[in-house]
Image 1 (cartoon, rainbow over the protein chains, first blue to last red):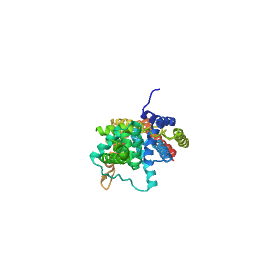
Image 2 (image 1 turned 180 degrees about the vertical axis):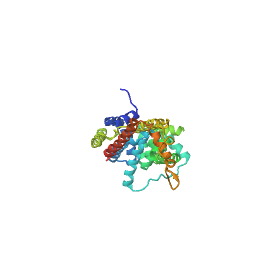
Image 3 (image 1 turned 135 degrees about the vertical axis):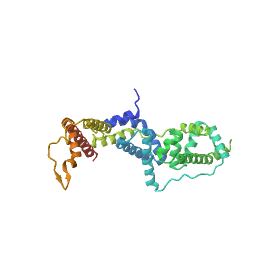
Image 4 (image 1 turned 120 degrees about the vertical axis):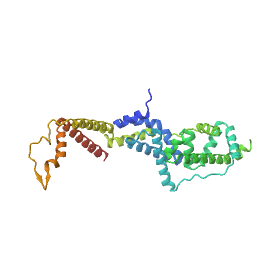
Length: 191
Length: 134
């Protein structure tokens, strides 16, 4: 079957064919849930946030302008919906603080991760990610997993591009810092 | 850059988190509920672009007709004797008004009715869309 663009489905929905929205749901449900999950860390909460985001997107589709892609516009909704849920839960601002890890330690950790087999790497990476703040996980996920550019992440999160760069850099450093602790006894000492 | 690429590679190895199997169905149920509450939500009679085109067309047509020489001469050819109040010649005071009215004679009644119809259509379109939004 021929794949149509997001813009095509949006036009159809705006003409009154709400069924076309299912195409967008099929296409983005995994990514939306994945981003919510990174922020909220509870699958039920993440599903609710992702569902709410789809409904918000449907209701404000007429205000969507092609100045950004639908994907970026929709992910901004997912991000904001999940962040407000997170805030009501935690009731405080998430701050990404810099950790102290030297370049040599970063290199050691990266080498160690690189030498693991894929299965172990996945395991340790997930443990490391669990130790990060939700905001840090979400930023790393958007950049490294979903392949969003810095500009797109800036548009989704409402942060400036330079702020996004700093936060991703710090989150990455923090992930390696956490991984160093996880791997310390098990792997680095062996190598 | 190489470090970034490595990190990307490692992230790509992670399994994607998946929502429950009935997630898409649940979303579509909620969407259809929203739609059933307001099925005509996204159906304005004429789009914004359409309205701008109509407005531009009406404006150009009216302007062209307005610019034409009047079919009947007014003002200078008047046979009405001039009258003055406190030294002001009333005919001269009202000359610009009669000039505009004379030019308006050029606009065909059909065009005027058409423009009124467009304004009425726009009014009811807005009324309809606002009523649906509520």
